[in-house]
Length: 236
Image (cartoon, rainbow, N blue to C red):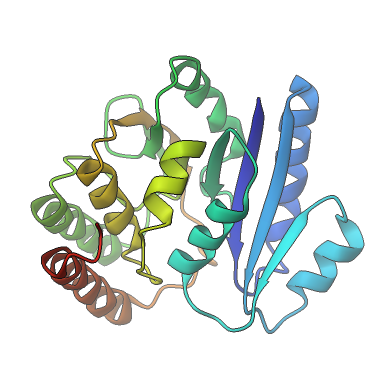
């Protein structure tokens, strides 16, 4: 079985190398077949050159301009060759070691396995700012209302898809920005896929880019767009 690890990155030259080294170490120790697809989302720093020089084994997919995490993940999912495809954040807020918890579900051939910080067994080592967490709770409530996905945590950046589920869902997804998580879970439910949540250990990276007002407005716009797209029949 081949596992594809997709890492979206925008100006991540300072945080990406330890993440890649951890991924390589994890799969190498287990003798597992894997590939890494780094999707560079129009970085203006040395992200691409750094990885080309230090980690030539990484497959780099470069987007011409910064388009958003949603598009980066979508392009990586559609380009990956794995039987299962995992996307994770460049800062390793959820460590690749947590993938171990997904393996029993993969053995059961579950199509969608997602990490969550909100159910029993999950652990948050370092919390986000209060307002960020408050917004996250509101986004989860509203997203569940609109998508009917009924999950505890939309935005944990640690989600795994079978090849078929990835093709079915991401070929229909259109949202490029922060609310793409809600769209792909909406599509998953619409297409009849079961969503399995697994509690993970998560740590906030203080260096993460936080634009609270921008993210709130972008998320509300994205959720509205999901409903409009559905009404227009764009997800058929």
